[in-house]
Image (cartoon, rainbow, N blue to C red; front, top):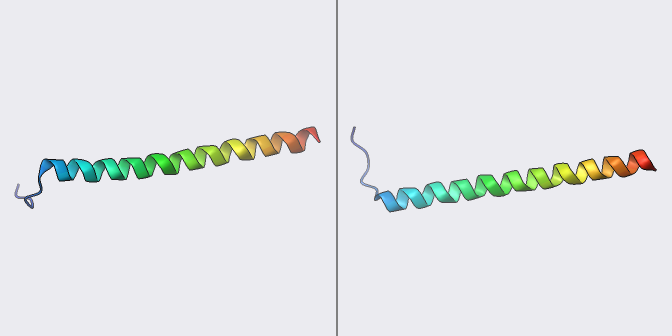
Length: 46
C-alpha cells in the first residue's frame, strides 16, 4: 500500500481538528436540544 508521504504528526493533527469540529457541533446540538426542552416545559406550565 503506497500512500503520500505524510508525517504521522500532520495526520494526527488533521484528525484532531476534525474531532474538535465534530465535538463542538455536537455540543451546539445538545445545547439547542436542552434549550428547546426547557422552552417546551415553560410553555406546558404556562
